[in-house]
Image (cartoon, rainbow, N blue to C red; front, side):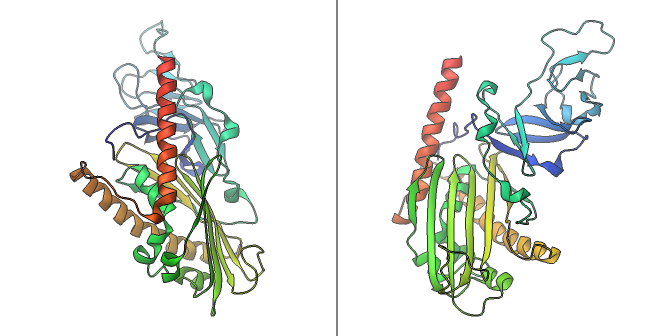
Length: 349
């Protein structure tokens, strides 16, 4: 895996869950850049470069004053556009005293940031995550930090054959490793479809769905380039027509994983597992979340282990197998996006 140049800037990434950002400055490193987020008095979210233009002090160590943010090293005051509007003990504020403001979009309980060329930030291109804000679905938001490059996480999410071996007590089943997925390119990335007719329910679905017999299980997941997975998944009693039809006896999830590179070697992982059943059951929130976080921690241990080995042996190539088609498609798409990003930067230079 190359050491540098794997970060794509001209696209939308999740910067935070909406509930994380308040009138107290929040520091977050995103794609190798220090960013500070805060809310104005009207509730709008602001994202500025977390670096005072005077002596590089973190603005996240500052304080909000109305809609503005004051650096608490030498007192410079910045407005939401990133312009310095006050320098204590100095009447004139130089025009060069400003910090970068990043385009944002807040929707579906998520705050999305555009770290690339601001002129290309099209809010209509923000990925769909409406299940997080739909009264017909319910989910508890989650976050994990990974000591790994985001592409290793994407590899993992596109390769469900690992469920049999990494998650034997939660999401795994011998039928999963044996199933041949359907893989297709889409305008947004890659779609992988897996169907498992008449299998024993995986432990997680058996626990929350109460299944006692065979089920028809499905997993239809879209990788939205470069770093999001949107997955339709569930189980229904065998023979009731799922997934073509969704009987009332089915349990359905719409999993969302949104990965934002922190650096070349670390990643933010925002996730949720919206469900369409037991909507008034707060305990089910905790049950589903506990199962998901258990499985994701199993993934994280493996993925961070991969990163350590890759760092120690960067000269050794990774091999591919027949089951890796979706991974290869995604890697190729990422390489194309990287080339496009580089060309855009060259034209702008």
